[in-house]
Length: 231
Image 1 (spheres, one colour):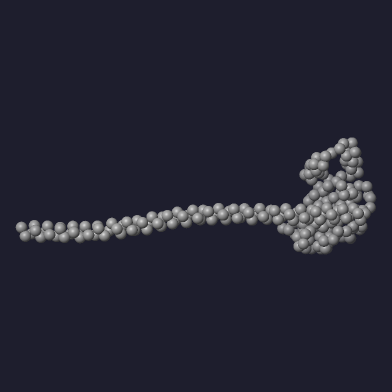
Image 2 (cartoon, rainbow, N blue to C red; image 1 turned 90 degrees about the vertical axis):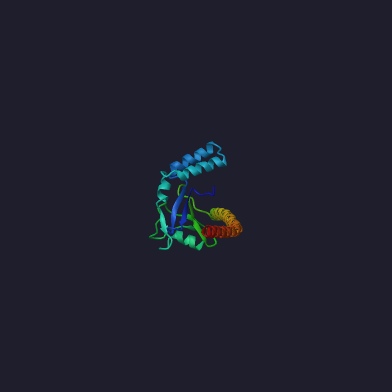
């Protein structure tokens, strides 16, 4: 759709600190490319059906491109690979020569590089080429890729913000639940304390008459004993 034969996504893995080959889109060779293009000529495929086919392509771990790209990991803190430079500098470019000693198992040049980043957030690099038809990459095609990478970076940022908001909402829900349970416990504790205070007052009110009755009982008992002794 952007004028390229193939495209690859190298995702920045924050845990491993590397650019990791994640997605590949396009034919593995000229024969597969001809079959795809003939199919597009002979039938009109709705956009969403085409997107479903693309999704299935990503999931096909046996496809030659997927087998190659899934094994690529480029450390971001060691060396100066051209993909790492593109991501750090946040500049799109057309690479006409693979630097000596740098790994690139996906064919020759030219290749278009478009970093996906927003502010300090680094997400990865999109790479596109024309290895099937061997057409040169024009500046207009690079501009289209840059536009796509910009939209992708905005979408990823939005998705991360939504995920963060969802996490915060879940934390607030858990906190509200804890507060509700604490409130229920406090209400029960206050009820228990009030019942204890009432019991203390009742006991105090009962204790005074009981003391009087007890005193009278002792006096009567003593008098009864003295009367028996005198008799």
